Length: 155
Length: 155
Length: 155
Length: 155
Image (cartoon, rainbow over all chains, first blue to last red; front, side):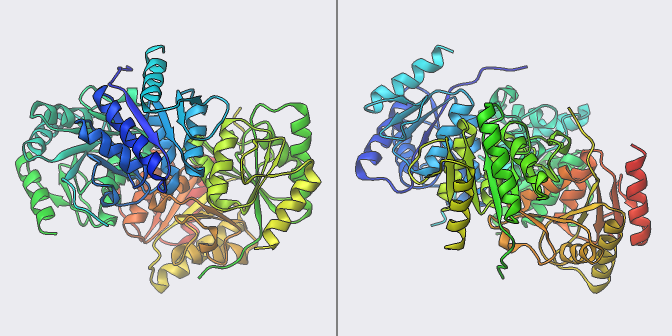
């Protein structure tokens, strides 16, 4: 029996992000929380931490899928740290668990998550991220979250 | 930087459980929630569902680490469904994320989680479960939860 | 202690491939075997099968990292089938085990392997594949195998 | 289409093994190779290394499923090193790929592999290993290999 649960959206992006990306990620996190969407991310620093911090400022719930074997590596804004021990292989779990992905900048790790998301036919929104066939571009956090939610409600 | 987060305890046991085991699992879940401990389990039926139901009756938070690729397989009492797509390989993630494990009955799948927990030097409490060197036996839910919490606070 | 072993090169590409891609993949497999390089691939059909068939015609050794839980899904040209049960998450194991990757065409699954390979700083050669920063383009199998071997011997 | 391939048998046991266990493991490896069975193991030291060495003395093929992200950690007797990066989670891949398991001694890691093997309904033979319901006891390498092969041919 498949039961519909609340939406979970993944925010993906690099550990090394510039200040502009961090501001965007934090706003995305806040908007997701304001829309009662759970946030899932890689649980570490940079875009992951900024988005989780944003979600927490709006009272959201944050899940961190960690590469490490110990959950203590999660950033301070993660409510639910999951210690996978899979290294960057944990990216597949983020893509599988999320209903949609929002990529903020990002390098090769982010590209692997985008690829997995697209392969699973999930909406993938990009803000200043990889321009890959299938990624929906957005100019700013508001537009990205709107596009993600609209893609989901259209399912 | 390793930061200490709230305790997460795993309740492990079979999908096929008898009524006695289900009652025990539900009580364990309720007691964990009453002690502000987050529950992690395999997210499916039997002991997993009973423990999650128990936790929810006491307002707890429940995490389900699913073998499937889709999170919709989670039982109705899971707040945070994680779709791993690893099959029974997801057992390692339960063991890694939990601070301690409480086994209720269980067959070979449960045995693999007990083995992983012991290998990671985590407290593993058993109620009518596998009798393996290193498993701490408990007669009932109260005793099991007490033993788990006491082992953790001793760390 | 890290000991140097024989080279293993991954051939990646889609299950659905056109005849031109299959011819290229088979040639790549044959050339790898002629250069005493072990072939690793996803173990299924399309580019994976064509490259393994090519390697076997030249007496090479072929490893298939399967998404399924049973090794019987491997194509007929796989000597060593590895049943991971990780679904497309098995792509990370191909990238980790290979010293270099040669992509022939390919869709999103191939893109995830390219991303992982680049993230691990491994040479990734593409023949009619994704044009991603970091991928070394090659026009044909000879050129691709030469570029891969030359990148490895330069390490 | 499921095609039958050559048998692959896993030899499992600890990295820390006493001399008696190492002698047994080496003999098991040699006997497997003499019976044209491929050996799969965890690829590291102790029982894993001894069994691989035994297989190589008889011209067998050896596969090592490594916990690490780099295949260079494999012992010197591994022909096919697979770098999973899954840590001890790689045990599930050994159990999935093997047609049968032979456990020589072993601690909790070995117990997890035994549990997975039994859960998958595969023959699990133990020589001085965990006494778990379902494990077939054997007194020595000859008996263990005979029992494994006989269980497989009965399928």
